[in-house]
Image (cartoon, rainbow, N blue to C red; front, top):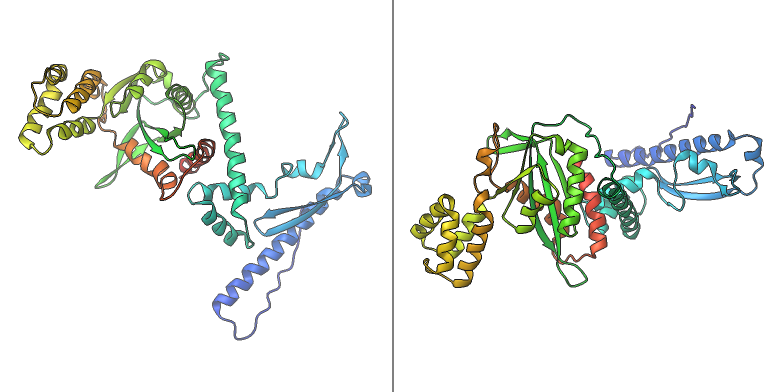
Length: 394
């Protein structure tokens, strides 16, 4: 199908470059709308004499990249007796959507990085007409809910219905590192919401002299209970990497019990590694500002963690009894997992949770923890599902 439109730009002789540029943009938008109207009109008339005689045609106005476009399309009857608009189905326009798929997708992408009012201003500048921030909020809720339902169906199919794990799109890597962490956001219900995040990668490479890049990176996050998070994470690792076929898989975390249990419950091929930095931080808090004492305890923690835990419970290290008990429990739970990276085989295995900490900042903090922000649990989950897709494409 070939459509020809004319482009006319009227300007005074004293026009500046900015005025010329704005006039050309407005003229191109008018020409784009005219071309779209002609194409849609031809597609509707191509249906035949029945379409041209259809007096039950309805008008529909949608927001496009060139502004608002009004279509007139006729109805038809399906074999089962229900009525439909063939032109809408031919164009892929969902019922009751007031914007084109590109505009909705672009609005959701902007809302994943900016508050809805800012996203509405940015989208308005792109399409050349006003876009209400409430429309963008509605698009995020609808599209995010659809993504969550689709993911829940796929996870249920693998764990409850017994379907085989999905085949990964790329080759199965020989080794994989999965770094897991969690952070809290403020909820309108009054209780804090725990956002659990996992960043998986097959290796690292030197990107700049002071920065390394993650290879085949995949980020997954959700606001849910540990078991639900473990199920969804196991599905994502199967879909992206084929996790059960990987020879060496390491789960890297800060020592929280629920993360450690992921390896036994949902990632059976993974071996757990406790982050060294978090252990050192807990020991420094116990020792306060006594640097020599901190050095002695840190050496003892890595050489004989269980012996140090027993000494702390017995009161042989001077300090706060509550902090001593907390540090003893931490050492008892993670003492056997401080040197897992040395037994993982060939490769440069990490023993710090910096990747998870960094992606908590990039994925959660920069969008969900700005000043004054409070979220409903359902709304935060829907926006987070969209934000994950936006980050994956970068």
